[in-house]
Image (cartoon, rainbow, N blue to C red; front, side, top):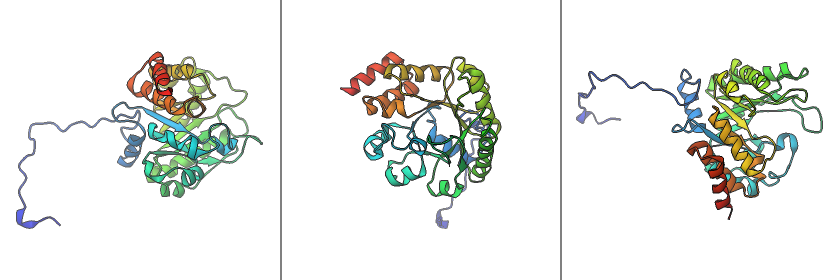
Length: 290
């Protein structure tokens, strides 16, 4: 309780000085509640408005694929260089030390594996995400999949309904159907559907015409790294995406399958946050690999 013997009347009211307008560094989030903004600020650096997310949720459909056989050996040493971690609740609880103090984007839907037909997913209980103090929940959308499109869109809006109650952002992840063209028209459609259904962040792929995809999406887009590329090409991908409006990258295989994963994630971080060119990023990668 305040000491009532030394209670001083206020006299510094800044009269004549307008209150500072509080802008927000995350696209489309200016009207969101404080708790939602706080979580988004953990993911997206307030100084740059960008994020480097480290994705290692691949095992929930692929099992112990290359680079994520041992999370403790292959992933934990990389955590310090990431702005945010994207993983499943099982891996988070079993393998990620709680004292790393990194925001978590939790893979929050699951159902089928690579052994069957993908995308037949259901959403986890919001209470589990709350218990694990996550900063966002990731839900996959199968736009263009005649069997699972409606179900995965329903998964997204249900997750948005639940996340809104507790101020937890939802990231819509655009999966690509086998019959879908990987072009700006498709990714623009899928990204906009995510945003229209309440996603606070969208994860999609870079493509020709990516600037149009970003322009038509009212929330921040982070790009997926996709298949493993040579390190220079992966850095070029990051550079082009950021310069065409992406708010960050969510990379997995292009980091943990690199010849030097720690050097690669640091180079990616420098391209995203420090505006290094691909050549400068690759030079940094080579120096750190030695």
